[in-house]
Image 1 (cartoon, rainbow, N blue to C red):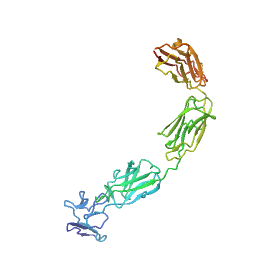
Image 2 (tube, rainbow, N blue to C red):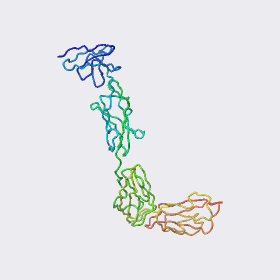
Image 3 (cartoon, rainbow, N blue to C red):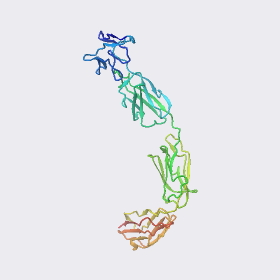
Length: 386
């Protein structure tokens, strides 16, 4: 039977009421998860049901046969965190664990400002999702946590319940992720394993599964049989990549071996398992290039007794006084080859003229051992000392 029950009484200024439904009425909170009776409205200023056109009241029709609980006044009980994941002071937490906080009642004002994560006092970027049905807030991270790291979760007292009561003080707890025990690995390589027809101007490129340390000429090597190939090794972090650039072109139709050692490690000192593979070059179709000259182009105050040296990036042939000229042949001299036919040295027959501009020209008559011509004519000049 439905009866009308007077629920409003004033005793020393205290509002007393009763209700029969889970939906608060008769002076109870009327936030987004509840309603007021049909002839009441929600007074948002005090978050209480109010008889339309009056000050907050609680006289309403209720089902007297279902509940006889009594309201002793406004909701003044603050919400609390009743469960958290990971647990406080947990160790060995997986780096992909979801970080959550469960509250004792429905709450509001949950955001990335009121629930945060930090490590060593530095904030970890994250958004926050809240589920009213489970009363649970979850941090939405941009990626996995760092291994072997201690984190602090803060749930701030600006979080409120539907009656406007703030959390009973800012709450925080810590946990530590599991250490990194996974070694880095090679995810791609160029040239590929057992590749053939590789260009003689190729570089060796290796990508890793994570950032690594220790990449050097000692841990990334290239060899022809047992003969090391000279080159420069560099490393970049985005992506995690090592590059070996040979100092000169590789030999044509030759098999090379690449080796990476366990001296390469990740940030947790997990070593790379040694990696070795081979590839074979194809025919040489690339012409030689000038790597460096001495004197340098546009040099000044060069001694008149200087010799002129040109270093190529591979062995060359046909370097003569007609393919390597000084001042158009006006300055005569002799040419000697060295360093496995990669360096040509012009020695003038007499001292160079003082205070003069000296021009050097190399023509495409110069070729490599595969008869590929110099990629383009080369010219440079310098000035002698007065």
